[in-house]
Length: 347
DNA sequence: CTCCAGTGCT
DNA sequence: AGCACAGGAG
Image 1 (cartoon, rainbow, N blue to C red):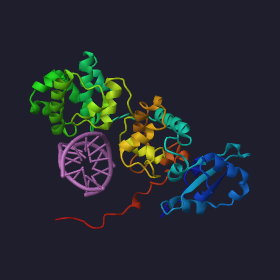
Image 2 (spheres, chains in turn cyan, red, blue):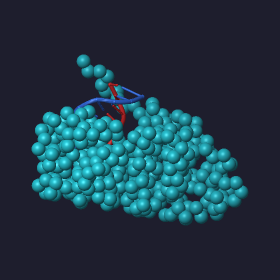
Image 3 (tube, rainbow, N blue to C red):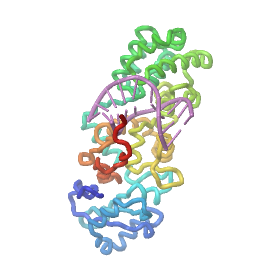
């Protein structure tokens, strides 16, 4: 099962190290308590053997929650660092308490993102979509931001940009104009953004709502934005951020969702399990992440998720925070999941 | 072929 | 929880 012969994080650490596993029952309620315990009996802990550790590491879910501690340090125990897998992380820290080393993790990702030329393909709305509408009134600009958000889901940035340009060239970037325009015309102008038919229809509905309820402007509250057709949590927070400069919450897309879970940064409330939806992730993340990071966390993790921490086969070997990541080297094997045996081909 | 990514509808 | 939407990428 554990296919690789790599112990997570081992190849990144150059100094001599000792890996230690402590059973759940021995772990105190806090990291500090566990740390103290290890300090008091360092010799005993050193007896653990590497193969056993790897065995344990891959055996989650059978009740033996483990805390994996790597004593990385040369002379004294002062430089001891902890590596906690996500299951245990939720056991030993209550919801809302910042995860261990999150600042180091963030710094590491920032470093990778600056050196790596990630084609920050934000799949969200980049500045380009906003710039088009820059020479308009504030209200028009806000409306353009809303439309950009609507169009940008499931769509590459340059495609969204093109669609916005087409709309602008036809003076179709105001609620009034869109309300009067033919839906088919809008559809053709925004093609080929993802789901263009549905989006054209939603644009018409949104324009009508903006006219009738908001005087042609866009809603200024999260709740009202969410009530618009085609605007879900992700885009609603994005629009609040950009159009109103009002940070009501973190804009969580699947990259943020996936990476936060891999890092053990979020857990389902009341459980020790991963969050299962972006909304759960947003709520869990907002419990502890300082508000200064609420906006930058999205582009940071999106770029990271596109280049290194990819959905399939994450590039843990080139990730400089793999030693801090409880999921490092655990999803590298593509042949680890076989579920499709029932149907081969239907004729 | 499978996987992907927000929203909405069952 | 699963699917539709409309395609792109591997």
